[in-house]
Image (cartoon, rainbow over all chains, first blue to last red; front, side):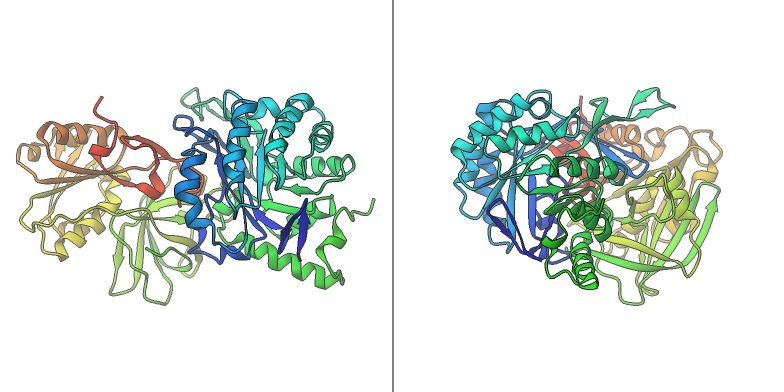
Length: 300
Length: 257
């Protein structure tokens, strides 16, 4: 079940997505979190952020919108106070790094690079809920390339770049970040959406628009993974609405080397281990020696 | 406190009136420790418009029968689906979540438990727990009309009950903060209900320097402090209601202005 993501050795291809799994320890009562192939912890910025005003969440059919806005206590607080509590968890603890300018991405990546037991970062150029930075870098090839190029200079370990689906051609962005030295791409981040309360004649979110996630986005995510698979050589981590092993298999067949589970952790906190077990069973059932054998194996 | 995901069996589902039902759930085993003020997240099956679990406060723990009581107000498709379950059905429940109310040290303290609407739910388990520990709690229950005053007999077992209704159909007419019992001095007030009501109760408590805890019900997704959706502004910044609350001392909240 092991896979390699741009130099990062993972015991299996199932990870949990940033912003949906806290720092991992929140879920430790429910399951053995070290069974996961990786845990992408909450989005981290160099300066602390209070995030957006409440309300930050609206439920939708088969999904939800969020407008958290990267609330976090900052990279140095993470290094001093949170890292010591999670560094010995026996899986890849990956930090999602964000910024409001190229310089702040770089500063944040430098702080995280100094932490021995963080083997990789996921550079978030796709958060739709912050006014500056975030998605503004991820929606153009040159914006995406500028962040990746600068972070690459200071970050020697595995660099995953998380792509935004709010673009005309995601394959172009993927090629641009690959050219600047990204080791892997993860996709998709949330889709920009909106919810309206008819009775109150008001938006449901304080920010009016927010990021849509959950099973409702899965077909879009699958399509984008398929497109990116045909555009780049670096491994892809697929995510977007995965709720069970079958969803995970679909992403792998479409070209993902690994997957992340996001929003469904809220409904079933143990979904990660169920997906690992289901994937193993699938490979055994069809006689695949390795999950690597089905990456991009979609028969068309 | 360790959290669990339990498949619980519905022992009974009693429709209290058209908008409320009382579910009694059991596992066959002894229920884990749960504190008054904590809540559970119920998984909702067979409701296409419902994606997330529903946070429901713990109404009562019956240790004799090992039953968890959940008082459900039917507000949308999710709660309607929960309200339609039948005895024998299985429900997936995550529990216990969040932090409970504080229990005072001095047994002689005069305690007032103020609940509004379905916000009366956690006050039953709190009142019962306080009574068992030797306190003498009073309840002040508020609602729109007498049909919305729930579980009156259960409350009466644990302390004196005062009532306000907005239409005057039961108890004193008006809001909880208009009730004449508030002319008495209290050492500790607990409150749960609609936010404007809790803010009015908090104002009353601030003005008299009374210790007061409020249980908030901000919209939640994960219920365990992972997603940061349910935050409330506090003196320590934005805090998750699910993991840092739902019970907050009002001095931690930014409600004074």
